[in-house]
Length: 254
Length: 258
Image (cartoon, rainbow over all chains, first blue to last red; front, side, top):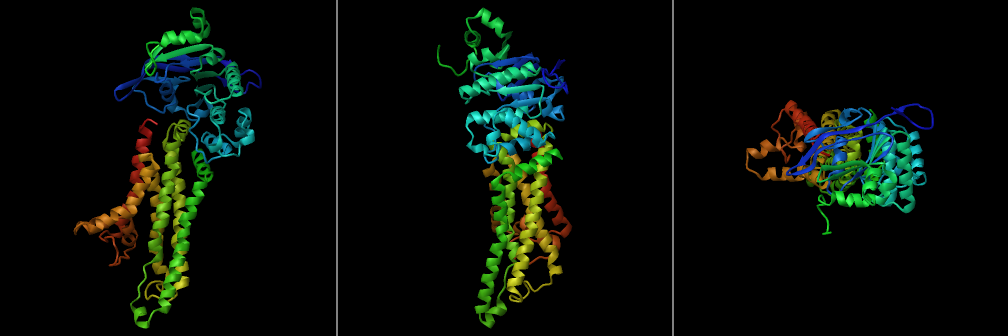
């Protein structure tokens, strides 16, 4: 068990994501193929793989959005769909564009928060935390991709959960925003949270993550620490290129 | 309850909601315009023409406006989430899924009930005020005799709202769901009117437009619909319209990968 650093120890943050032989087949294609790994608290786990490797599908399976063909994904030892107030245990950003452009940032967050009995006070807090307090009443349709990423992160943070998953949160952010995300991820991990972060930006991942899970064509390629990988290869990017060279589906010849 | 609060805020926080509600309520103004026009024509007509003049029940004609509008609102509440992708977030936050659909249905159903009653009764009272004792037998019937039909007409509006939600969830596209609603209001009754008897009357009796008069036993020979159903059977058909597509939608939303 890990206590949250700083502030009163009002609640214990403890989170584990466990995949056990997770498999998902869509028609004839195996999107996720017998995937087993565990994501543990206290550090950022980078989730890497070429386009189409099954990263987003894996996240959807963890969140119970798609039903696995076989195997299972557990959060804190339970299936996600059995959680009664899931926002308090798991926060996720899958697609920053998945917002109704006609709603204000504040209303967007509040209507999502209400489903898990979270009130306006917490909405205001997360708006400040992600730096959107000044545009809280503006309609989301006018937001840049970077602002939408911040809004999506705000949704994930609403329930102050022990487990957080982010799918490509750095896309569309300016250098200031990239650094902000890096610091946020690290501080969330330092508080004892479990963070699963997918990204294609290797240099960024090398700065943010401590452990790395690489998948290709739905299969686990390697699970290692960044230190282990950078000891064996010149850089994380070189490690990634070498390890995924057989798994790239949509790449130019190299 | 928390999901209901959430969905209510979702509906309230969009401008499109107010636009559609306003459009639905504008049926009252259309009814008023028609009544004023009819009164003017009646007053300039000769006595012989007056004795033969008939007028349709304006609230029955105009109820199509709130029916369509609330069907569209019902569809939009769910299809807008599918087109934006917000549905994934909604279903992640409520993993049981059915409460999301139930809350949406409850809200558009209640809105439909209010809007339906406002337009039907509003049109009725304004038309009666404007027309007075013109057109024998139309608005001269005592209110309590017309009340059952007015209530039954009002009830068709929430039925359309629920149909919109159900088909929105089933089809996941606003255009598709709205096509179904328009088909139910206009296209299918038109086709049924053209097929040979006895099937025209048999199928026509099952159309939503036929149900209010079948429920109240208030059938008229000029109706484009059939009138074969007993009041109890017609009421059951109306309940089936409101519930069966929703049950199918709930089953599918729970089962389908989001």
